[in-house]
Length: 129
Image (cartoon, rainbow, N blue to C red; front, side, top):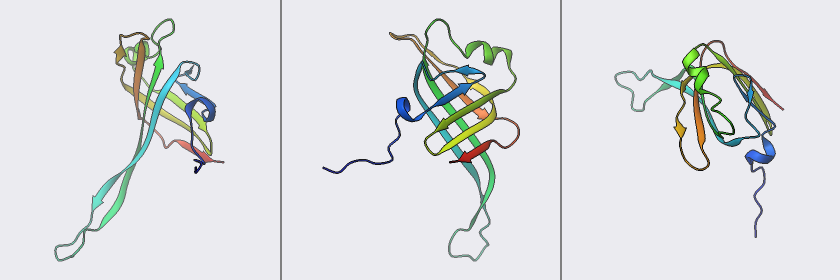
């Protein structure tokens, strides 16, 4: 049987996950981090194939955590402003400023809270180790 190498699991490989100064690793369920680029179409009238260039970069993070005593992010979206997101995983670390755009609460057993954060401000710091 072949072994899977380089596989990352949240409980073992994420060493830091801080959103708005709140550590969420202890109550961490899952997170998604995405970096995207706008696509600029520079195809000329008689080109046979589409031609594209990179545009503006963007990042987004969604995170789900267990609600231990009270929701962590609901007050942050109501008060507005920007927050700092940082995490370190196997191979790289990330530090960026973002704004919370959604905080759904899932009333279940256990109760969970999600947060969606979009980039806001300067370029993030990404370090590859």
